[in-house]
Structure formats: C-alpha cells, structure tokens
Image (cartoon, rainbow, N blue to C red; front, side, top):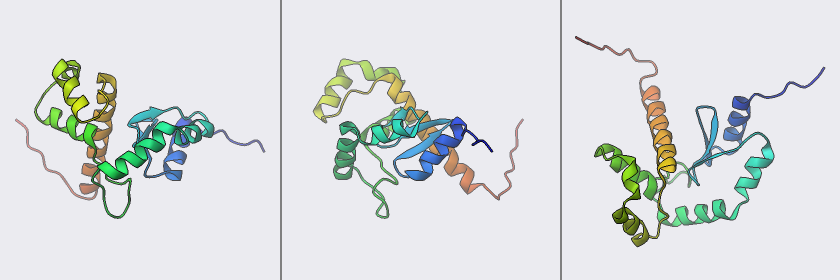
Length: 150
C-alpha cells in the first residue's frame, strides 16, 4: 500500500509537536517564536537548517539573557522587546508604519535592536493576535456567552 503524503497543515503540526517551544502554527504556516518569522516547511530539512543557523542560535542565547521568561520553560512565555513594543503601539492606536521615522531608528539603535520593518511588525502582530485568541478560546471553552446587541 502506498504511503500517504502529509498535507502542509499536517507537516506544520508535526513540526510544532517536535519543537513545541520554538515553533507555533499561524494559520497554516510555521512561525519561529525565537526569530519572529515565518519558516518554509515543505521538507523537514528546511526547519532543521533554520534551527542550525547562527542567527537562530544567537537569538536563543540573547533572549535567554535579556528576556523575562516563565520559570518552567525557557521559551514558553518569552516577552521580548519587539513584542512589547508592538503591544504598546497597538494599545495606543499608533500605526505600524511609524516605525520608519528617524526618531524610531535612533530609539532602536540606542537599545541595540534591529529596526523592525512593517512586514515583520505585522507578522508579530498577527502572531500576538492569534495567541490572544487562543487564550480567550481556552478560557471560554465550556462556558456560555450571552451577548446583547441593539
């Protein structure tokens, strides 16, 4: 009997199970929590090569030093500078395209961070929104919600 090929979603789920703290699934794509970027996952080789990159390993070391984390797991609630900044911008209703101003460039250089591009900000924003939605779904899983509208 021939082997059944895994769909893209099944591949992403498999990778998320294999590395639960480094990768999450956003829509049907693989997202690296460490590098804050989407990873190509057509083959296992793509993910393994991403894990072995110098950038990924350097960010793991950097985040383990600079970030506040949950005590049970070093990767589980990583709240780092870009995520905090995007949360702040969205709470204050500041558009993400403001990241390209000269003042923001100086701000990022002062804190030794790379300047975030709008595309990366939107990726982090969708990741944070999906994570928030999952948290809400878990809290309301077996509860009834009553909503009144006019």
